[in-house]
Length: 244
Image (cartoon, rainbow, N blue to C red; front, side):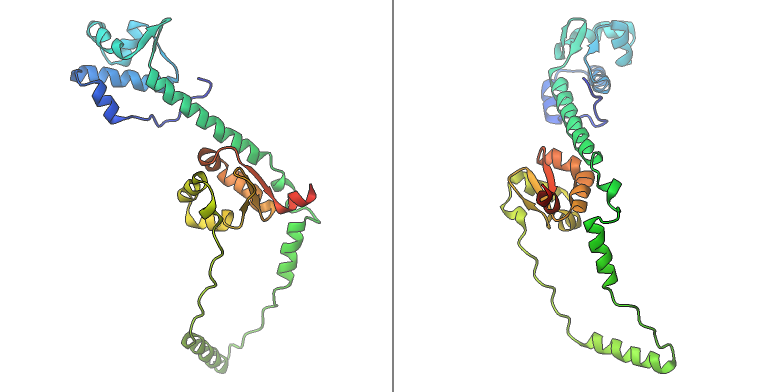
């Protein structure tokens, strides 16, 4: 294998019990230890009796009895013990690792972090303009009379009815594919609302964010889970599309 497997080893209890009904307790223990060593190494086990006996925590004499039983679960060839199911799961783990690595590389390649606060950056200019538009804080009257007036205003606000929040816009995930809806179910509701809901889809695998900051944050923060549930996704934004 080109990549080491993750610490988590898939174990299908029903399949295992169905295939091992005739094993004794010691044979179960030896088989499980061989499977775990196989997974940890990420490759077939060497056909060396001393090495295999050590993995199975058995003496050489005990291993002579275990070998003919346990070898039936492996394909022993070319000096190695191969296991079809473990090889299949190792391949899946390696492919998932590669997807996460590619998604991380795309996020790291982003130049947003390097020039986000450059003078003249449109996003920074908009943020600065919004801050300048905020009203100046007003001096507060801290006298007893002022406290009384503030208390009256607070009571008046508490007595007035609270207006309902405006209804949320349509959620584009409702008309998206099963893969996008599965992604939404895996995210925290606030993450979806803040980062994904303001976006739109341009085709099945192109996500258009409202700003460069949103596009780069999604790529960096959610690249791995995007690749795992949707596959390779192109993340762009309205600013980049206008510039191109």
